[in-house]
Each structure stands twice: as C-alpha cells, then as structure tokens.
Length: 608
Image (cartoon, rainbow, N blue to C red; front, top):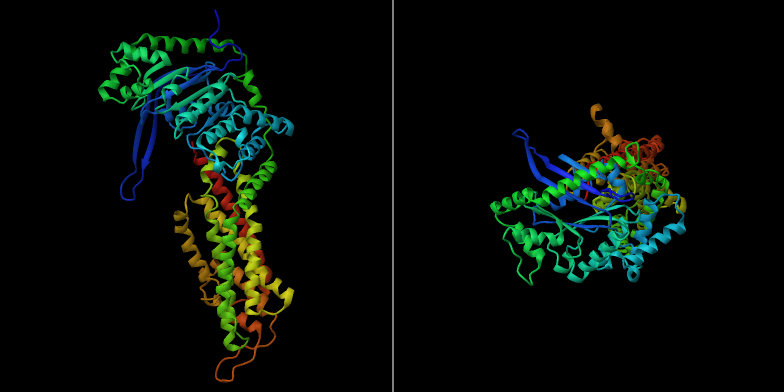
C-alpha cells in the first residue's frame, strides 16, 4: 500500500477546531472593553503536491482568515493543527518554505518588471548563487509566466493580469513547495483571470502545492481547480473535496444546479442562504461519508509522518531552506539605495517642480532685504534675514520628508514580512538617498539669497553663509525621518511636530533673549535645531563685521561691532563649534529614535 505522503511530496493538512481573535476598545472614561470574535469553526482539509485547491465562500465566510491561518500570518487563539506532511508546523518553517501572493499587488511602480524581479532575487536568493544563475532563474520565470513582452515595461503601465503574474513570479523565485494566493483573479476580466489560473496550473506541474481563495470565478476558471473548500458566513465548513464532487454533494441534498448555469455561482448562492440553511449544510457535511473520509485521510497523513526522516524535527528535504545564506546588510543597503535613487530619478517632473518652488521661496524670502544697509536700523533686518533663511530651510525639509515612510509603508511592511530585507537597511537607505537632493536644493537656495541680498565675502563668504543652512537642512531630514517613522500618517505626525516646532523655534533667540530664560527652561534651546542653526549663522555673519556706523540720533543706542549684535540676541561668539556639534548629535539621536521606532513598527504591523 502506498504511503499517504510519498517521498519528496509536500502535503499541507489542517484540522482547525476554532480560531478566535481578541480586540480591545479603549476609552478615557470607561474601562477597556475586550471583544472576542470567532472566525473559524471545524475546518479541515489537505492539499497535496501538484494540486490546486480553491477556498470559496461569500463575503464574511473567513476565506482570507483561513488562508492566513494556514500560512501563519494571523495572530489569534487557534485551537487545532496546521501540519506539513503530518507534523505540526511553526511560523518560522512555514515562512521559509512557502510563498504568499496577496490580493493587492504592491510594488514600486516606477521599476520595470525585470528590475523588480532582479531586486527581489538579489535580496531573497542565497548570496552564494552566482549572478548568471540568478539571471537564468529570472529569465525562466519571465518566460514561463508570460511576462516576456512586458519585462521592460514599468509596473505602473502593466495590466491587471500582468501585475498578478509578476506577483506570482516574485513569490516563486525561491521555488517554495507551497504557494498561497489571496483572490488572485479579483479585479480581472475573464480572459486575464483564466490566464492567471493557467499559470497556477503550470506551477503545480512543478510539484508545487497551491492554495487559493477565490470569489465568484467563471465556470471555466472554477473547473481548473482540483479541489474546493466551501465556507459559509461565520467560518464553518460546508464541503471539502473534488470540484466535481461539490455539485454531487449539493445534489444529494436536493440542491440541483440548473443546466447552463455557472456551478460556482450556484454554490455561492446556496452558501449565502439564511443561517438555518447554512447550518443544515454544515451539519450534513459533518455527518456525511465525505467528512469521515477526510478525517481518515488526515489521520493517515499523520501516521505516515513517522516514516519521514527528520533532523531536529525538520524533514530533510526542508533543511535547504535553513541553510540559505541571505545577503549581507551591506548588500541590502546598496540595493535599497539603488531602488530609492532610481525611483527618485524617474520622478523627474516632481523633482523639477519641487526645485522651482524652492527657488521661488528663496526669491520671496530674500526680496524684502535687498536694499538693507549695514547700519543701526539694518541690524534687525539682517538678523531677521538670517532667521528667515534658517527657519524656511528647516520647515521645508522637515514637512516634505514627513511623507517619506507613509508613502511606502504598505510596500515596506510586506517586503520585510516576506523576508526580502531587514528594517535597518531600509530606513538608512531612505535617509542616505535624501541627503544629496537636500544638499543641492539648499545650495541653490543659498545662492539666490546670498546674491540677491548682496552678502559680501565672495566664495569664502558664500561658504560661511551656506554652511549653517546646509547643516540645518540635514538635521531637518533626520527630524522628518524620525517623525515619519513614528506615525502612520501625516495627520498624526502633525499633532506632535507642530507643537514641538512652536516651542523650539521660540527658543531660537529671535523672539526671546536667551539669557533671560529661567534656569529650569534653558535646556530647551539645546534640543532646538532652530537655535543651533540660527546661532551658527549669526556667529559666522556678525563676527566678520568689525564696525557698524552709529545713527545720527545720539539718543538712540549704538551697537558698534558684530560681536555686540551677538550679545544683543544672547549668542556667544565662542559657541560656533558647539552649535555644529549640537547639530551633529541631534542628527544622530533623531535617526536613532527614528530607526528604533521604525523597527518596532515593522515588527508590530503586518500587511497581507
């Protein structure tokens, strides 16, 4: 008699008694209310190598929940077993030996299909695999999955079917024995839906076990599946078996599918009946010979597992997934920088628009100070000019970078969850790629302000003028990255950013003489990037001025030197290196906070 799990075969089986998740409603005035939701009840089944299984049911039946439970991507109280070749499987093993194709296709849309696959292959395949071997794998997948005609097309221009086939190619790069697909035909026309399922059939011929959720398939697509698991609203099972056997089972209950009627639509209409009808369906299946045969099959799979050779509880054929040497973090950082840089370069219209707007802001900020002279009346105007340049630079780069992580959070969480790369390389790749753009924009901004106002000093004077501005811009990128990494959206980030900015720029020295601040509040200036930037700018501009003419009105006070101006605003000419050191420390601390917040967030959140 042949074993239920032949050597080399991968059999996924499950016997889930219940799956419950807990949610908590928080309240400021009342106690937290804990809710328990039962999502699945008495769901059993199996899928063998080379088979294509469909999980079907109406909305709210728990199709995606069951898929997430099978591939260990859901947190909840699961009573029962999910097994591979009869042995209970943990999340670590399941993630290593399976691929997951989500319902929503997420990718950096400016990359071409070939570039996307090259990026993913470099970061997911064993680093000992040669470049030629990786290219051979990629070219083979492009050919097998029908992507040859669009391999050089940007993802944003691909059709729905092409994007779905690209998602499949991404997940099978590592040749996993099990593949999960969440509604792979959703949003596709009948032709593209059929082509996607045809690709899945092609993958099963490689010996892959494929489990899909599917919603309202056409009759052609429905008959392409080997087995089907039918669920009713509430997460109970109404049938498991062959596709042809489903109609026979319902027919035995007096539910005959009309001729020339889509059998999938017929089954879904019955599964979406009243609670009394669906309860009868589930009870009849549980009492049927089909259910008893299913239980016997799962028991036989468990018994056969004893014969499989294991090392530390892991079957020998799966050990290769544990011996993979992932790319180093340096390689991850380099490729993530490549992708971010390419995305930025291809978004040239936005870059140009941003550059033009930034230059116009520089023009408007500088225009009121064009005719300012270096005299007693001009001291306030020139200091106001320094303040305007520093604060505008800080605000522009802070708020523009707040969009950095929320814009890609879904893609990033999915790729980290799939083990493509680690949070650290991703965070620092974004931070590094931002710097050249920020520095160049700030230099041109400073050139406009420097020349328009007529700041003296030539090349050295421009260097002294632009250095604190560039440093302030760089610190602002760290602040923007930190806030962006901590919050899910811009609205939430603004709730903290705006009050912090208001407090810290109050301590910049332009509104408040810093020597008059109470001792218990003086520490605030040391966390103010406005203070460091403006004091450094003031020191570098005023210390080079030896004399300032007094006013003709002898009754007015006269500040005769640039050092005197610094003293007026509470700055010390000896603090220049302290300011640059403070900005350097602030830059490092903000990025450290941002990184740890980002890492915690990536571990806490997941995206299907």
